[in-house]
Every structure is written in C-alpha cells, then in structure tokens.
Amino acid sequence: MSDILERLRAETREAHERIERDLAWEARVATLGGYRALLARFRGFHVVIEPALAAVLADDAFFDPRRRLAHLDADLRVLGFGETAIRELPPAAITLPRDRAEAFGALYVLEGSTLGGQVIAKHIGRQLGLTAEGGCRYYAAHGRETGTMWKAFRLRLAEEARDGDPDAIVTFATRTFEAMRSWLCAAPVPLLDGGGEGPVAKVSQRG
Ligand code: HEM
Image (cartoon, rainbow, N blue to C red):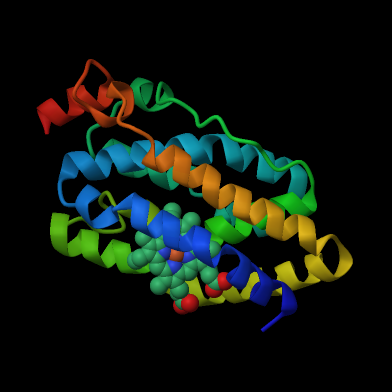
C-alpha cells in the first residue's frame, strides 16, 4: 500500500466511523421517501464539488467517469422528481478544493464512498426493489468496474502525493468527510426532507 493511502486510511478512520454512524443509512433507505431525501442531499454536495474538481484537475479522461451528478439526477427522475424540482434542490455550502492536493483529498472521499456504496446498493435492491438502471444508479456507481476504478485512483493518488503536498491531501480529505457529514446529517428541512411544501414533500405525497 502506498504511504499516502496508509496515511489517509489511518487519519480519516475516525471521520469514516462518524459518518457511518451519523448517516444511519439503513434507517434512511428503509422507505422510498427517506431514500429520496438522502439522494436529494447527496445531489447538493455533488452539484457544487464536481465543477470545482473538474476545473482544478483539468483532466476529463480521468475525472468524467467519476462524475455522479448525472446518476443522482437519473435516480431522482425515476423517483418522481421533475427537472425544475431537481434544479431547485439546495446546494451544499462547503469549502471547495482550490488546488490539486485538495482535489485529490476530496476525491479520495468520493471515490472511497463507491466501495461502501456497493454494500448499500445491494441492500437498497433488496429493500426497495430498485436496480442500477431504475433508481439506484448513484449507489451502484462504478458497478463491476469498482475494483478497477479504485486501483486506478490509488495509482494517481500515489503519484500526486509523491509530486505534491501529501499533508494538504490528508487535511482536505478530513475536511471533506466532515463537510459531507454535516450536510448529509443536518437537521431535516422541508425542501430536502419532505413534510413541508418543497419538491420532496410533493413527491412523497404522490409516491
Ligand atoms: C457518505 C458516506 C461515506 C463515505 C464518504 C465513505 C468513504 C469511504 C472511503 C474514503 C473509503 C476508502 C478507505 C480506504 O480504503 O482507504 C471507504 C471504504 C469503505 N467504506 Fe465507506 N464511506 C461512507 C459510508 C460508508 C457506509 C455507510 C458504509 C457501510 C456499509 C461504508 C463501508 C465501507 C467499506 C466496507 C469500505 C472498504 C471497502 C474495501 O476496503 O474493500 N462506507 N469509504
């Protein structure tokens, strides 16, 4: 294992445990409404971080296959959201990566989440009867390519750390975990979580 991966694992272990605990994903994906609300939150995160990552990395061949905003939108459509409702979902207020080291720190968190995502996708399939093509594209993520994509990411990460600033990678990875946790686990708001007049609420009533 590369030094940087070992450091990232060790130094973000607690942050991973915190997000796993606070996300309470099994409870949230137990119902279609809860799952929809969770995807709506993930969208707020991806809609701001993906353009920032693309701009900093300036490497479409590497980054484009790792984008997942379109997957979130596809799932939200399957779950009853219209285009306007999707566009109106609130973006997350987070600190965005400003350079390559910060981008690789953030990408470690996003790409790493596709590993645990495989477990969650299977669970959602059993629980809600959704498939990668029908409502669970985001969690299915790289699917059968997960191992290959993670391996390729690790190689790039090791190169970046060797030529760049490993401390900044680790610092930004920790910050990204925390930003994600605060955004995904914040108190319910009507627009995102239903129970009010927002699109999630309207869709929940329909579904
Ligand atoms: C949004 C929340 C999450 C984020 C951002 C996240 C992030 C990560 C990261 C960065 C890694 C890579 C660790 C490494 O090898 O260096 C990872 C691995 C993993 N995560 Fe998560 N994770 C999240 C939620 C979860 C949840 C809820 C589960 C529980 C099912 C989970 C299960 C796993 C597993 C099993 C691995 C290891 C896979 C392997 O080594 O083959 N994660 N996650």
